[in-house]
Image (cartoon, rainbow, N blue to C red; front, top):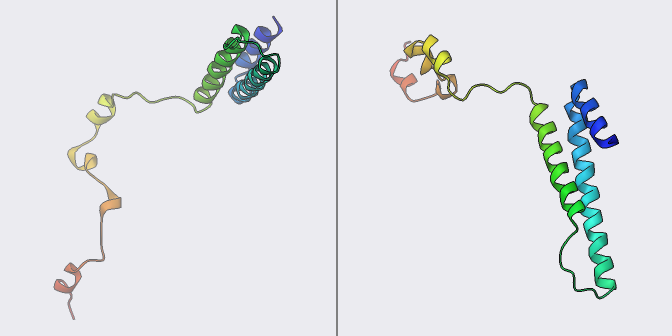
Length: 114
């Protein structure tokens, strides 16, 4: 109950970085718990070869919380279909690429005037 209340509090605050870090901490805890469980099983010479469901659930929940925090902290996504933006541009604006303009080329020699 405390976990659900804390997550709802974090999400209502709009602090998605907290959710991201909380998910990472929970992932680390799930990894440590799984390693600890494996060590106990090996030391007891038990033949169980599966990780308990609560550790798997914690890992999946931590991944989802961290992913949600990471995706939400980067702002509003733009629409992948740029139809409205491209309709407003003319042909010259659409193909204008200043990074491809080269002014230091051999054509300078032909246009050189003394």
